[in-house]
Image (cartoon, rainbow, N blue to C red; front, top):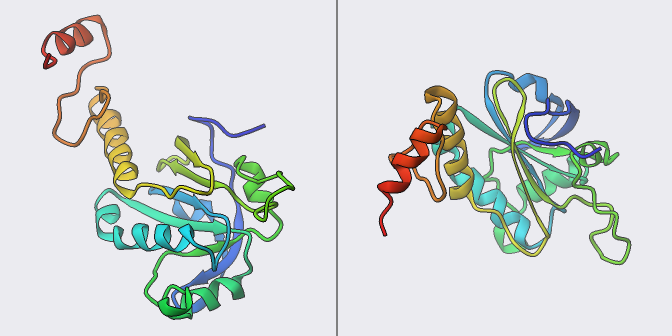
Length: 203
């Protein structure tokens, strides 16, 4: 069955590459106590994928400030990841500038466990991952799921907005309304809270 919100995130143990080295036995369990973004993407050496990897990598300081790490996952081998990481941008590579671990789900088991495995045999991206983003909290519960078809990249700003909203709600027991951003009004989730909030909405 597909995973869903508040479910314990399926664990995994994958090899991959980071920076200029291959890495081994990277498990979700290693990140207990942190917020984790699982960033599934179709393939290395493609088109939208490097723009997403650069965008999330460039947001490293903002993500660290909210106790969050990013793990990229595709079906490519660790050595394919490594060649892509090392290749220059002019060659379609990542130019040695990426610190995000890129993990290798060569069996596709993790993709299937998270419901992002592409079973459509009519496309060139068959048996690869859709653009799935899963936000996992420090207790390893899934708190946010966001899956795009492969033609559209994901928004780092929206990811950070959701992280901050969930963290605020967890700490303060209040909820964040539509289009909420940090510093905006929130309210207690009861009849009095929503009534007061709606009365004060700009018309």
